[in-house]
Length: 284
Ligand code: RIB
Image (cartoon, rainbow, N blue to C red; front, side):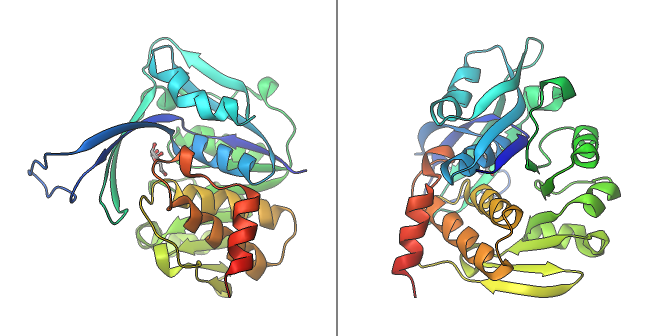
């Protein structure tokens, strides 16, 4: 069994179901509010766990009442939380998410304790695979990426300046279309795989500018896309780290991401390996 170390963010998601997303300066009323555990780091950790990996999470939360809610499904799902720090001086990260009936979303994050994440090497387990995102300090990401010895996956989300050594060292970079446009030619510094996701239209996997594989997800009834990119990232990283062929790993990751859109919330929607396998068996 692969052991994945995820260094990343943990948030409590305040998800408002709205008829449509507000325009700048507009108030959209009549929403229904739900709370879900989230954060890209937490979502990717639990996704990897549900897909069959042993997983350790290194993250930071506050000592407020939101911390336990944000960690509840990770703990219940068997993610090792030994390296999750509780910081007095900052609140647990919060994400305010508006979700439409079509499953589209708009997210505003108040990072809180995620901004104070510090990695203590002596608390980290030896792992085969490292997964990071960009909701934690850039220096922390650069340090762990460059010192880790196994397979390294960096989800370049949300898009922001990143040290070029991160782009060069990663075995896998994952971006969505918007992020791909934001990074532009800087992605040419990548030496490893670069995966670009296109929502319901699927994803492409390239290396050195050459497309190695393209895949379209099976058709599903999407209700909430929150966490779909995180599921895709974890699934693809596990597949490639395990040595699966690029087309195979990409098809699996697209199916896993699609399943994550069929239930509400980030972490409650993350699929198991069995669910992904069954969806692929039913799909042409
Ligand atoms: O990728 C989805 C996640 O982004 C949400 O769970 C939210 O917490 C934000 O970090």
